[in-house]
Image (cartoon, rainbow, N blue to C red; front, side, top):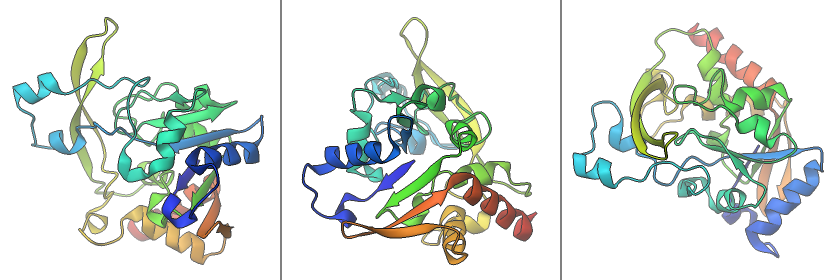
Length: 245
């Protein structure tokens, strides 16, 4: 599972497409590359909690189509090239959308339902089941998406939950709005939801790096990290439960 900052890496011959192919080459034909891409038209903020779209806005808002949806631009340019890859498979959760290329791609992104964004039943759970690794190519430590799974399964009280709406296509190709409830991935506890302060993902990732359970190096000009996904999730679950269980 790759998270990248092209600005941090610097100029690369062949651009983002070459980086995608380099990562694919590194995992080989028996491997799979996965990315968290979300959706550039996700109405998460517009429908979060008590927020509501007007009737006109709801009519005009496009339905999520995994085969024709853009990636959230805040996650970087590389994701746009992964999404556009001819062999890419994409999950059906609009806001928590995952894309994968390779041997396990269809398995990883299958059955991604609303209310199962990052926890049990999500692509992250299947990613852990195949002993995935997380690669940060110049991306910051707040980008370790797999730690949302640790938040979801950690036995801690007072977890924050949110509700929001997403427009999906039904079996007849018609748009239908669905409201769902899930864990708050922007702050699993109140202490991690304070504006301008690190969330739980970044805090746990920093503690993991401090424990030196990772590999690191440079790719181009970028400081890069490689994490064993099951290990960092187990670390994160224990970290949360020890402090807040």
